[in-house]
Length: 66
Image (cartoon, rainbow, N blue to C red; front, side, top):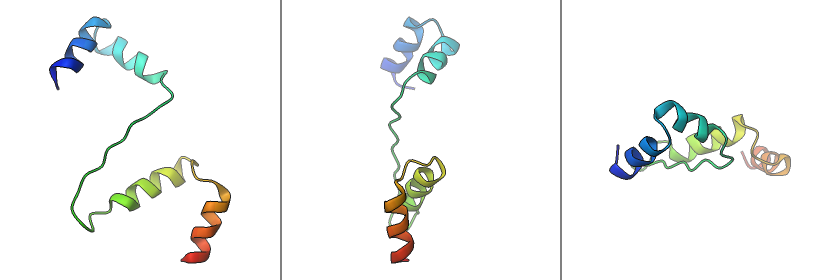
């Protein structure tokens, strides 16, 4: 854990308080790293699909292309 995050957690009253504060945020920043053919795009696509964050017209376009 980096020192900035550790300081933020300490300022907010501990890990439990920090986790509760994080649950009320509407934005999730997600980073994926890997080599070629490690499945990065597949993972992101699956997360978007499973959480229903992809529009129906985009999904039907993908079905037509595959």
